[in-house]
Structures are given as C-alpha cells and as structure tokens.
Image (cartoon, rainbow, N blue to C red; front, side, top):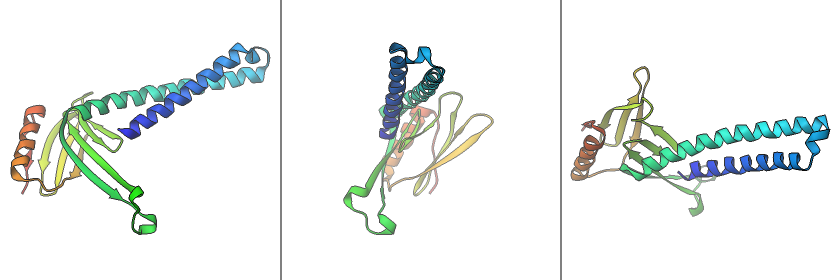
Length: 176
C-alpha cells in the first residue's frame, strides 16, 4: 500500500506543478502575446490533464487497497532479502512484504488483484501443503493466483477456511 500512496503523491505533486505553471503563465501574460508561449501553455495544460487522470486512477487503486487492508481474511508476511551480486544482504536491504487477502481482492506489495467487484468473481480457493490458490475472473477470462504460505496448524487452517466460506461464499478445497 506504501507504493500506491507514493505513486498517488507523485502524480498529485506533478499535477499541482503543471496547474500552477499554467496559471502563472496566464496571470503574468506571457502566453497571451507570443505563439511559442501559447504552444508551451497548451503543452503544460495537456500534461497537467494527463497527470490528473493518472492521479485519479491511483486514488481508485488506493481506495480498493484500503478496502482490502481494512477487511482481511488472511495476512501472509514474506521477506525478500537481496544483496549485491548475490552476496549477503545488509540489514537495510531487507524488504518485508505483506500479502493481504480479503473479500475484495489481494494486496500484494503495491499490486492489487481485485475480485468480487466490476464483474470479476472469485470462483475457487484451494489450500495445499505450502500454497493457497485463488481462481477468479469474468465469464470470458479466468486467472489463477498462487501464493506461498507458511506452515499453519490445522485449527487455524479450519478457521481460515470457515472465514473464506462465511465472507466469500466459496468453500476452500483443502489438498493434502
């Protein structure tokens, strides 16, 4: 979710910059007299409008990310450790990623996989020894998402299965 917030902030900042630049060009009259200034003003307005569109898109993604994070069914914390040229990583290079699964979709390190929205439905959930698989999509197109999961004791696994059944209406298939 941090990556989505960061992109939203960047698009907002650039949109504000281009709107301010366009307003200053209009106020100080530089765009009224010279044809080059008018072309520059049109470019600034066009760039601001395009960036505003990207900003609105990111705000929609942020709204969905808040829905997913606010209504979790399952949280899986992973760690990706990377070092220079395959060497040992320094403590500052450890990236800790959290995967959140919800009724509304999956939030995976700044990427949103949504379902039960906009015609995209969750079709099946399979829980294996070391993975959880989600099948979702529309009538025409289906995709399968497979997440690695940590070892979960049988009682917790039953609670997760019941939660999926209660919140999504899908009974998970347990494959052992």
